[in-house]
Length: 111
Image (cartoon, rainbow, N blue to C red; front, side):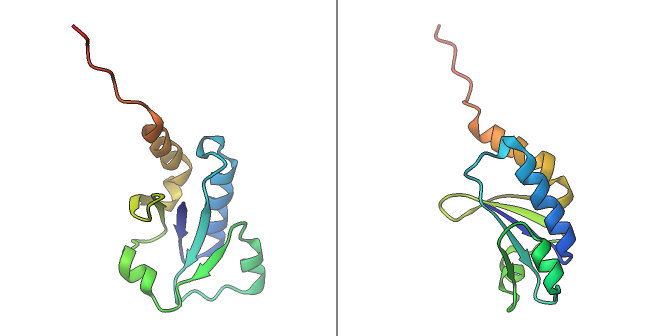
């Protein structure tokens, strides 16, 4: 799962669309947008978001994850945080991270 966090819904929408356009992320990657509690996007901004979107109304997401500006978080299937990176880097960082996970370790020399 990828959680995209930013105060500007258009920033989140652009990141979500670029992730969805990247074939390397695979079909099973769920993308969710989280907007901070002070963000109050209008109906047109919410409609522009191509992924499920939640507002951090109580500020709990920010308190627990400590985003520093627009940030992408990758959550492992067991619910733990796998990695995080600046939201503008998501298009390159996410496929690279997922590729690193799927690359088998080198086999030791059988001598």
